[in-house]
Length: 160
Image 1 (tube, rainbow, N blue to C red):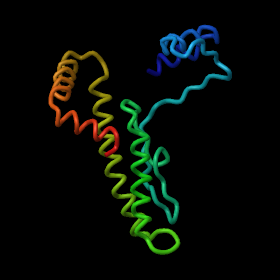
Image 2 (tube, rainbow, N blue to C red):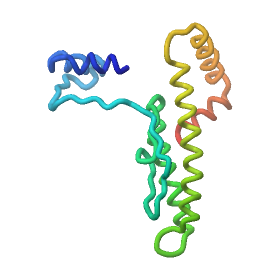
Image 3 (tube, rainbow, N blue to C red):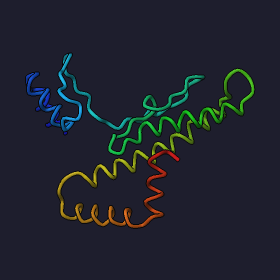
């Protein structure tokens, strides 16, 4: 949380090092800060325009999502794979405006779907509201016990 971040930034180096070691459960041994500490808020961002002339945005340049499930990299890889697929069918120097519009339209739709899903999950898992806890419990149980749904979520998470 932003508050936890502020607390960590306010620590002296010795206590910060201890906090990092505790957060890593000692798996990496003693970690020591080597430079000025900085914080970068986790925010969803989405470029309105992904193509301009021959400039094409993809990955974090085009979209960032909350790292709740680590899907951001998979989205970026899907961007690259789709652009490569489109370009492999092109003749000539680079790509037609039509091909680049196809890339932008197709990848924006997929990114929007994932952004909405991550925002929904973030909201669902935020706080201790009893109704949210109930919905989370039932939902997680259903996903865990229904193979096809579990497989669908796993497939989506790895970018297929």
